[in-house]
Length: 173
Image (cartoon, rainbow, N blue to C red):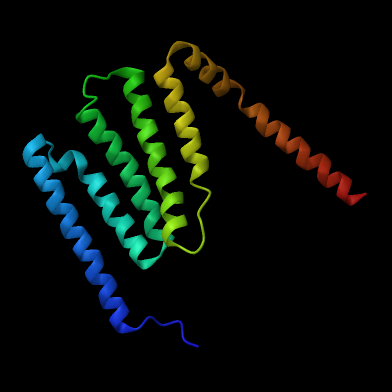
């Protein structure tokens, strides 16, 4: 049994990818005519969409990863230059991190929908970014928690290391 994809299926996939790319670019240009958003601010968003479509159609998680990351970055930039243009400082950083975290979650979602194997690992960096972004948006009480966590996180490494040493020692006896 051969793993090769028939030429006709490959052509249909390529046609679908290019069709989605053209529709996406056309919709973006139409929206920018009415909103004044420039493509430069949303270039990462557009590139991310391209990679997500490409990875979804070809069922390859390798294209979904840059797609999700670029979508998250692009969404953060568009939000900060568009509807949340007045945000400054920690609040702006928090909003950007939340958008970036959604991009990481998008990798898991699209892999679950379009690829045979679900990529769960992007939820780890995405979850960390979502926690930090939320803390920055909440403000002073949570930034104090982040400061303590930033100073105390090596304790977790020490605890894991000790566990591995003691566990390994227990295996050898």
